[in-house]
Length: 224
Figure (spheres, one colour):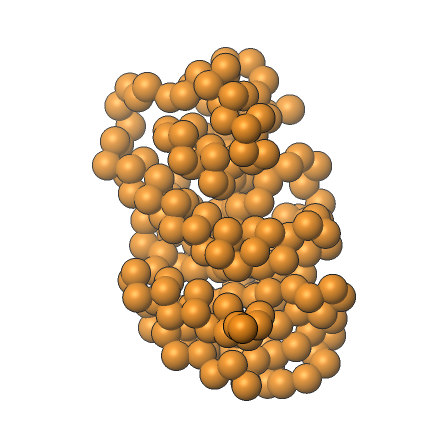
C-alpha cells in the first residue's frame, strides 16, 4: 500500500512527464495532521527520493530531512487557511505562468469561467501580487484573503493549487494549465463565458469555490 511519500513522488513524476515542471522547478507537499512532507530545495520532480523529503511543522519549522523548497510558506499558508486541504502543488507551467503576467479578469479570479471543468475542478483563482520567490509576505497575503479558493496565480511566476488529496491537487494543476492555454488562444476578443446560473449549478454539485455576484462575463464579476 502506497503512503504519502509514494503519492508525492508519483505526482511529481506525472507532472514532470506532462512537461509542467521544467528543470528543477516546482514543489509539492502533503499534510498529515500537523506535519508536512515537502520536496527539498532544488529537487527534480521527475525523480524524487521518497527517503529524502523535508518534514515541517505547520508553522514552517524544519523537523527532519534536507532544507525545504524556499516556497514552503505558500504551502503552509494553504494548510492553515483550510484544514481540509492535504496537498499543495506549485509549478512554473508555461501557460499558467504566461497568464500570471496578464491583468486579472476580476478581483477574485485571474481567469474567467471559460469551461465547466475549470469551475468544477479548480474554481476561482485569484492573482496574488508579485513578490520574490519565497517571500513570506506573499504567503501571508494569500492566507489572509477573505474568500474561498483552492488555487492562485502568483503574478509573473506561476500557479499554486491545493486539494483534499494529492491526486486532486495535481488534477487541479493540470486543469488550470489547460484553461490558461485556452485563455491565451482566445486572446482579447469577445468570449462566451459561463453564466451565473451555470456556475452556481456546477459549484453546488462539485463544491468548488466561486463567488457569483453581479453578471458573470464582465470584469469585476465575483468581486466584493
